[in-house]
Amino acid sequence: MFKKGSQLFIVSLLLLLVVNCAKRGTPTGGPKDETPPVLVSADPPNYSTNFDGDEVRIYFDEFIKLKDLNKNLIVSPPMDPKASITPMGSASRFIDIKIMDTLLANTTYVFNFGESVTDNNEGNPFSFFKYVFSTGDYIDSLKVVGVIRDALLQEADNYVTVMLYEADSTYTDSVVYKKVPRYVTNTLDSSNVFEITNVKAGRYRLAALKDADNNYTFQPAKDKIAFYDSFIEVPTDSVYVLNLFNEELEPEVSRPKQATAQRIAFPYKGNADNIDIELISARPEGFETLITRKKDQDSLQYWFTPKVQTDSLIFKTFANKKTDTAYVRLRNLKPDSLQINPATTSLVLEEDFILNSTIPVVAVDTTKISIQRKDSTFVSDFKVEVFPKKLQLNLKFLTEEKESYAITMLPEALTDFYGSKNDTLRFRATTKEYSDYGEFDITLKGAAEVQHIVQLVTEKGDVKREQIGTVGQVEFKFDRIEPGSYYARIIVDLNANGKFDTGNFLEQRQPEEILYYPKQLDIRSGWYPKETFILNQE
Image 1: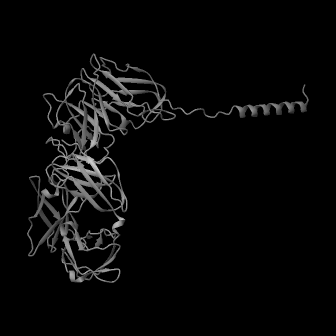
Image 2 (image 1 turned 90 degrees about the vertical axis):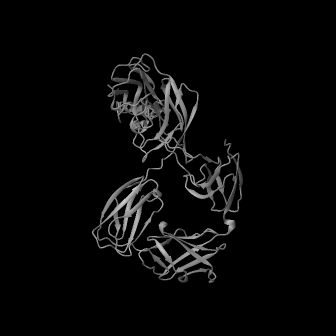
């Protein structure tokens, strides 16, 4: 028998040993797991031939999850209905694929999981894991590779679907609108390079979509499209370049609605220049109309005066050789009110002072307008140009460096479309010194003997400055550039119409070529860089 004191000593000693052992053995967590899952087996095995089942199970060496499967998974050829794949959102050691579609004979199918298969703990991806089988007695092994570019922007979109359509006796160009392709792949979010694998030998149409609905069919109102000019023959060693573009939609007018007491909004698509609107209701004496369109608005605004004493108006619309009749039931709405706002208070030297209006301004009395410098002297020589269809008016006068201008418009200086006059308006605008701006000269070397348009754009592609050249012009000079970062974009304006022309799939017309000067332009105050851009055009 131990004495009580001895027992206490032994217990204390044991506790001390346990604590020390616990300190020495406390786990540190070990190195971070950076190893992706490993395929253990599949039933049927990967790259099986003569496949005739409706279910596949794929086993891994650890628990996995499927991440963003809807974005990453590409099944080629596409299946309809789509295969059922589990687990979704929970960890498992296997992937189960249940095939719901009737499989094509003698066809190689590819399930490309992209980056979706990850381990459960750290999320390490099993990159571009593919499960492949054939319903025939061999696996097709040919491939088509290429690059996706954007026709207008520097960077192409992510998740671009690239497609091959069999060019057999049933092929027509309308298949891109109606049918799914024979083979597909996707650039996902990591590269603009594409590779369609496990293709059989044959003749194909190669196209690509920024597919908004992920349905493999071209919807011009939603999708960008790219296509190769001619059919391709597989096998091929070529690397294909596809330029994505938005088609210009066919002009179309939707159902109009009354916006204010004397204004009707006509929603539209396509080129508004090819749309006409005509009132066919009875017109009161002195009836006047005006149609306006502001940039980035999706409706034409139909203004009318005087106010009509009727409960509805009837219109005919003309768009794309199509005539429709539209009825608008009138309500007792509030009238528009005239407001004038400057586009900017920082006036660029040698440029107009631009004002935007909420109602078209149709007349100006310049005797009721004054422009005063900061030394209280007045600008005597100025004029005002009105652009009612753009809801804009421009004050044109000789601006001076580092000057401040106070612009006053007395009552009745402006008359709007309804005959209303303005109250007193006051604006301020300031200018900088010429040395506060930068300049930029660019020479196009090796340019074809055609017209070019040179634009200075932001990283997002917004146009800040533009020069439309003449045929054969290769030197372009930009002055009074606000300091900042720009890119030089060159449009090869083959038809010399002074604008970028997009492509059209049914017409098999590619968009006009655009080239970006490879360096970002860092325009600084007082800097005057001169650059040469070797185009190497044929």
